[in-house]
Image (cartoon, rainbow, N blue to C red; front, side, top):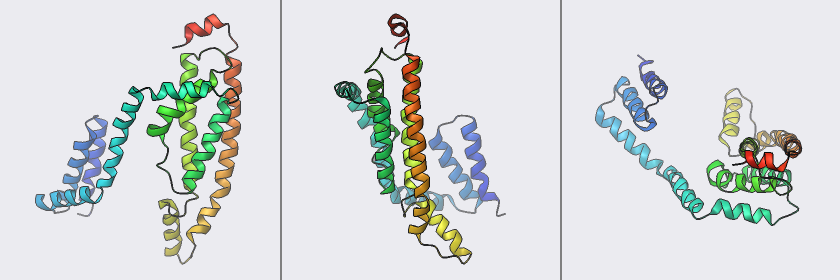
Length: 234
C-alpha cells in the first residue's frame, strides 16, 4: 500500500518518454499519486492550489524569456558585439576567465540568479565572446561559432557549480550537516562550505587553463586563407 503513491513517478516517466507536454504530465502525476494515497479530488486540488500560492514567486522566472526576447529584438546582441570590438586588448580567454571569476564570486555569496544561461550567456556573453574571437582574424566559421557558444555556456556552468558550494546556506551544505548530525557528528555549515573552497579554486585554475588552450587552438585553426574562412562563416 505504501508503494502506491509512487505511481506518479511512472506517469512522469511515461509522459516524458512519449514527449507529452510537461505541465499536464506533472499535474496528472500529482493527481495519480494523490488518489493512490487515498486523497479525494477536493483535497488534491486544495493541495495543488496551496503549493501554487506558496511558490508563486517562482513564476517571476517565466518573465525572463519574454524580457530577453524584447531586448534581443532591440539589438542587445549586436550592441554587445560592437562594444567588445572597441576593446582591442580584450581576448577571448581574458573575457571568459573574467566572467568565470565573477560568476564564482557571486555564487559564493549566494547570488546564483544574477547571471545564467538564459539571462546572460545567450544575450551577452556568447556574442561578446564571438566578437573577442574575431578581433584578430577572419569571421568565425559555423563550427567555430558553435564551439565558442558552447564554451561560454560551460564557463557559466562551472562557475556556478563550484562557486555555490562555498555558500553556507546552500541546500547541499545543509543536507551534509543534517546527515552528519543524525549520526552524532556536529559540524558547522561554515566549516563544510570552507572545505569546498579548495575545490572551487582548483576548478577556476583548471578551467582558466582550458580557456587559454581553447583560445590558442581556435587561433591556430583559423590560420586558413581568408576566402575559405569567409565562405564557411555564417
